[in-house]
Image 1 (cartoon, rainbow, N blue to C red):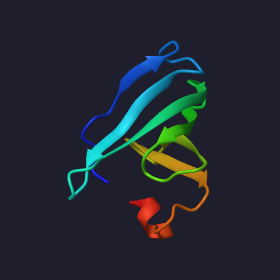
Image 2 (cartoon, rainbow, N blue to C red):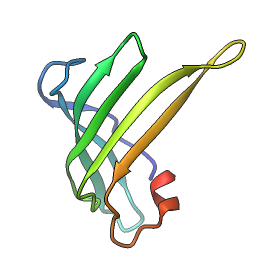
Image 3 (cartoon, rainbow, N blue to C red):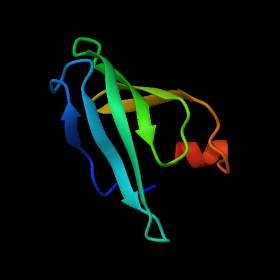
Image 4 (cartoon, rainbow, N blue to C red):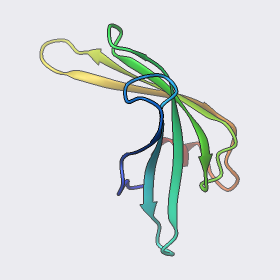
Length: 99
């Protein structure tokens, strides 16, 4: 799902747990705008990670909690690790969630 809109704060304080943002808006082939509202659950600048949950959407998620973590790589650079736990979305395969 290509992302066209990345962020719009709806409530809460930026960078603090409780922040709710409108995120992941994209237009699919039929012209429908897919969207989700995410709530920041935790942020840890020392561990370089954050967790969020989808609290509202029109994609079909019933429950979705994800964690992003920046991991150092050997030498220069870093890698972003993204993990999630969610209920199945009707009509989606596991591969559809990983795209």
